[in-house]
Length: 373
Image (tube, rainbow, N blue to C red; front, side):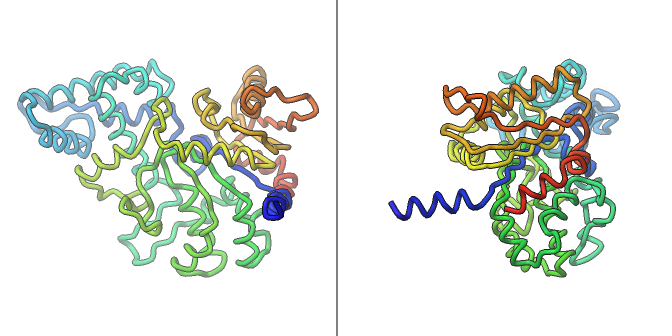
């Protein structure tokens, strides 16, 4: 009983802040949002040759074509026209994807077509790695044994504004303590958040990579739909450097199996439970560049009572009716099971119709207070 009271005291003492990140947040460092990503993928999978018997591509991406050929070679008992099936599928994706708001929706609409699923996911992985490489967060490892991104290029982004509020003149020990009270659920395939944190703590505290990794041990980031690979410093068997353009066809195939779309079932119940617990234990939730899709909100819905008092959400270019819908969606999220919140229990919800970085400008002092623990 004493142990339970002690644990409850620790939870009450430490004010937890949960960041829920969508594609609009990564856009501030050059990653494409859904509407742009689908166009990029459509062009990559639109494989066409100079003539029916030629090998010279006139459209489409050669690395995706190589991955398709690798996949076809691995299959048993397929007919000789199997590669042509993928070519036709890529042409179909290119012609039809404009009728869907994103690649995720398009893949969901074609859930019964394995060729569409494979090509779509190859396109996702290749496009995200390419976008990371074009991002100001990218540092070319071929130019230095210890490359560093040009962080001055992203000073006016939410990444930098959040980091300043976390560090805020603190030494390494106090900064690390603050990380215990911050969690991230990132619904993106990119690795921008973790990559940014590593290089920024190295820069601020003048650390080598091993020291920075040690400092960031409390940093809790969940990617419910996977990523295009773990970063090399994360020491897994699925390592891919940020923005890596040397990924082989075989590697690209393997990475495509590691990502899921939002309409696919997440089979790892532990991930779902972890996300729901983060929502339950948060005092403040901050949505950045998030789309508020029903499926994702259902995944986040806590199974027990929550402690959320304040919610902040960016809603760039959203109309007033859409902002009202977002507010309702957040309130529905925080109805644990079938228990309806009493009006006095409703959290204070702030919807801001600007970009993520502007939300930190508007509510900076309040967010800083939440992060102070």
